[in-house]
Image (cartoon, rainbow, N blue to C red):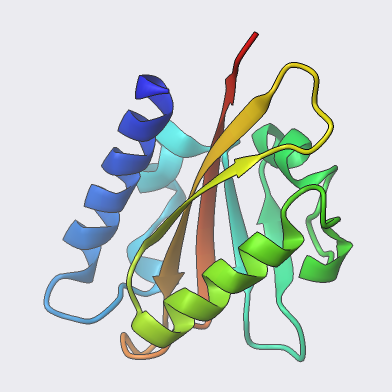
Length: 142
């Protein structure tokens, strides 16, 4: 768990640094080079269409989300894989413009996998979220 929380705390600190004096940073403030330590555990969720859609989904998120989600709508994530929790988190960060950590235990998983997640709002104008930067790390309990 320490590894997961440390990685998410470092990502949150980067988000804080990049936002500066604005409410939230823009997607352009978070280049791939800055996100390299988290690649594979990140997704970008576009909020500009009729429904939230995964613009990008790292391979490390496939177990968390139930498969490859790139170019798929949020509704493609099953309830067991945390669709309702993720939707609630997105609604919260759109309302508050603040980072939102989550913990999700996978239903029916005999190894008792717990995912430590972080949703971070990004917005072109620094005032309204139009993209979510989502990160997740698994912790397995025997």
